[in-house]
Length: 370
Image (cartoon, rainbow, N blue to C red; front, side, top):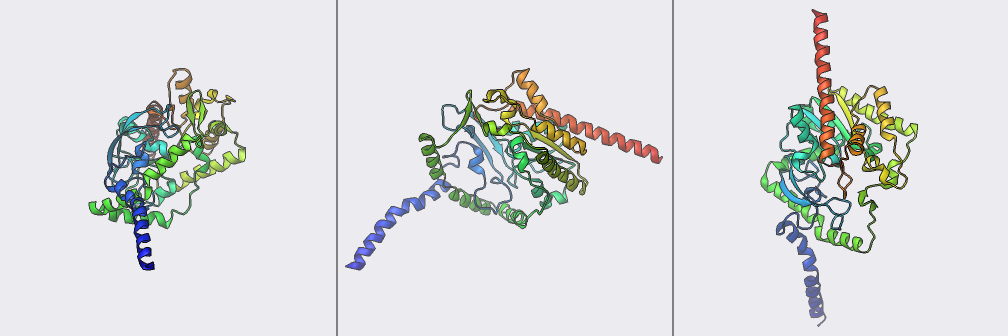
């Protein structure tokens, strides 16, 4: 009798647990990939299967109506139709050629931008050179990636949103894990079956319905706090425009100067292009209306160290104040296509001037030798 009761109990427990066990497989195999997500970033980003070489699933082409990350599924959400491509390495590019290489964060990847609007593609049209978006990634990841050792770019541009600049890592160990991911990624990409298995396993691990439900509950009960001024949403609010000490500025400059030296050892020129926070350009919307001085001070210090920089803040301020241009979506802290176009123009002119200067120096040296 007892054995029968135990078996009945086990059957009931099995029936109770079975839907929860099977549901992740239904999400990963049956439902559309973006069924529970509000943007492509979450849909195709690598979650836990760190065997793939890049931050996103490889060889993807996807279209979706997205909302900004700061107010999704709210009355403030701004919907936008977006298209993505990823290359065989899992980065947001149509191909793998890299004459000019951009290293950066989600702004360089192009959160809430369509493929033709991301910095790499806009810059490529202006320069007439192959521009590769290596983002999100770091200089250390670049230094530890074999394909860039074998086929180095002509120049490396590191770009970072202002709030992330203090967190940029100093040049250091590239890590065994990164090299292992490159190797396993190459194996996975060698077979469509292996790629499907890796992507499916990663999608199962995401538990998309669970996370969407949790986010909806938090939003309903007000646990998710958004920083909102004048119907514009911000990542950090007043904290973003805090004052940095001279020691902090020097420490950050040391890190960026280290990038210059590490790349110089490989014969690659280095350029740094910061992206102002939304709080920086829209500072008058914040309660204090305080204008930060972090970027001007940092760029002045870098110039004194002969580090090549591109100043986007001055141009962004001019576009916003004098031309009444919006540079960030209302529901997101990333830049929009207007800001990207302005930055691409500045960067293209800087790189072209650098090329002209190098060519002139070479001609002068040849004349001296003659």
